[in-house]
Image 1 (cartoon, helix red, strand yellow):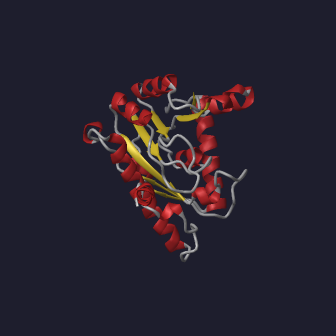
Image 2 (cartoon, helix red, strand yellow):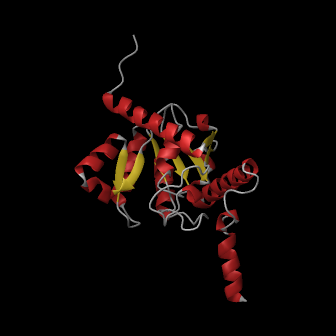
Image 3 (tube, rainbow, N blue to C red):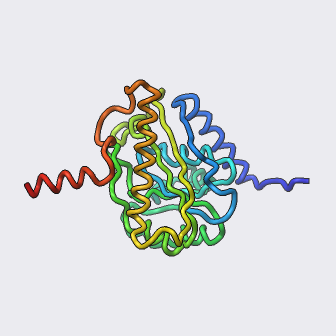
Length: 240
């Protein structure tokens, strides 16, 4: 007889399945290689951050196991909301960059063999382009010594940009889960390696969305640029 799953596990997967239905119906969401997330063992999913949609979108297609997320510490002040996101495996993190407790909590979860999702940019993009990762991400990866799975989201900024209070239904979005990278393969410049892998996947998804929509979506903008190119152009202009 198969052992009964804990109520918290069943609740998580009920919410996960509900959100997947929402993303399928209202955004025709497409997911590429979700099976790259292993069914067991510690792993760190590292993703670019375009919208409030990102955590549930990435987690909604991972049927094989629950994910642990990060959420602003202020959200836990509400008993109702705090209780809900706690049951969905959320960990509190303060808005400032150096939240040592959150880093310790993440590493502790990884030591227990969990799958944790982080957004090393620290906040949602303002224009659809990626920004450099904070050093806290590299610290977590070094200490955790577990496989890293790069994850890219695209179309999500256009569906729910930072300056809008709610999403625009009908706008398409995609997620790509990369091949797991063993800890010993990451090298010394961890952030640089993962930043470029994620941005390469993001641009691949962006091109696919344009193909599916006849070039109409996503709208042209900073998100079309390769990661780092905008900073390089800005430096060149300043020097010139």
